[in-house]
Image (cartoon, rainbow, N blue to C red; front, side):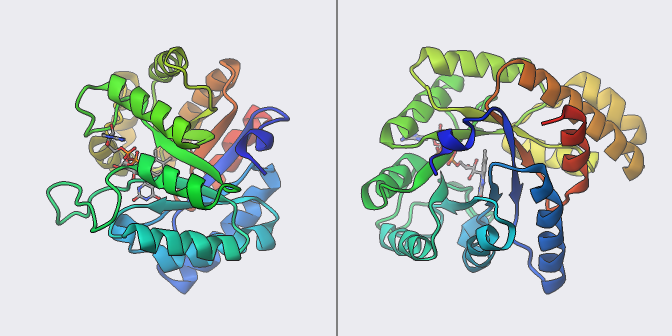
Length: 288
Ligand SMILES: Cc1cc2nc3c(=O)[nH]c(=O)nc-3n(C[C@H](O)[C@H](O)[C@H](O)COP(=O)(O)OP(=O)(O)OC[C@H]3O[C@@H](n4cnc5c(N)ncnc54)[C@H](O)[C@@H]3O)c2cc1C
């Protein structure tokens, strides 16, 4: 089913997970998916680790999701460490396994590299991966990432991000999911600019409920998400009290999502970090 059809009946949630490293982690993940499927999500997506390190684990989990939960599954795929032939072979494997939805990414550079290294006969940007998928698996639905606050490597700020989002759309992407952000005004400005530049695919905001503020400050510094002063002021006094952080994190994310829904977003994409509880609590209040 194409992405547009998944959102045809109105706004829906989607949930992102990472492939666990241990058997216990995998058991917990399936329990988490069983909880979240009750919320009727549009799809579950599974990340692909830095350096392609989780290729097998991503494939193993994502190809079982539809059968085990009845929910559409989206496989993240990055260009890191792969030639175009290897990416092509993985796409063929996915097609054979009945997968039809891919989130096409360039991926982050591995920690031991100073800048993103293009593999021999590999791709420097997600646009090229989108093109490959459109050419070789035209029946796949392709989503891409986008950055309302600008990707950290973008040379000309948001103009770059919008230009490359439009290029991804022109290559065949039919959905964009954003990096997480905490200031909705940033998202609305980005969306307006993107629409003015000819972007017409649904741009789904990425939502990160804060469960651990220390960790979020670290993630945010790496991915270029700003933390508004008001959020900082709420979280800092309780930073070491994880229950208090979670309560505030859920309240903040719920208010953020309610505002986004008032502003006509097609859906909400939750970065779950393999935990169901916060997303369930937020979605129940929203009545999605
Ligand atoms: C929803 C979401 C899910 C993610 N899932 C994963 C995951 O599973 N695994 C993982 O490793 N990472 C993941 N990431 C992180 C992502 O891989 C990084 O942000 C990465 O640095 C950029 O990936 P991209 O696909 O946006 O790259 P690109 O679109 O290629 O952009 C990378 C940089 O190059 C510039 N650029 C883009 N296209 C061109 C072009 N044609 N010519 C010149 N410059 C260009 C952009 O401005 C940007 O600065 C995810 C991010 C998001 C938002």
